[in-house]
Length: 156
Image 1 (cartoon, rainbow, N blue to C red):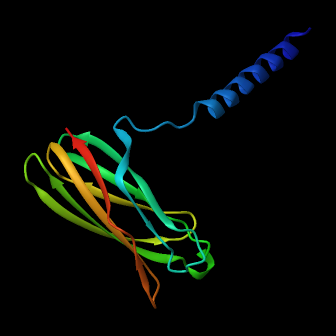
Image 2 (image 1 turned 90 degrees about the horizontal axis):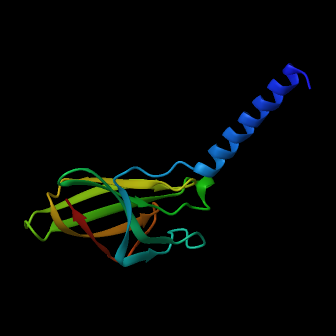
């Protein structure tokens, strides 16, 4: 076998190995990111009724600095994306049971395709932090609230 053919075979082997490594390795998650299950999940119908329901069973928590966390909630995507989806207003209340600190954060996002995320930056201080949140899914003519969702985060 000639040298150019061997080089092509070796190059093809390295290329195949790189593709396989890229496919099987995945992207992974950030060092401080964890999925926290809710102690009380929430559920609601879409305001379009004949659509995917709003269901939240966990939140993603990312902590990189002592006393502060980033809490991310996923939202439902809507089959009615051509109509513009619907608005989701979310209120998150938190209470650090170790220090007594409390806070409230609000955000609004659009539920369409692809599904969005609501992100809250919380400066709770270190300790056990209990949180509740409630979403209201709205169209111009009516709104459908979720039940109150609950969870607990240990912040260092």
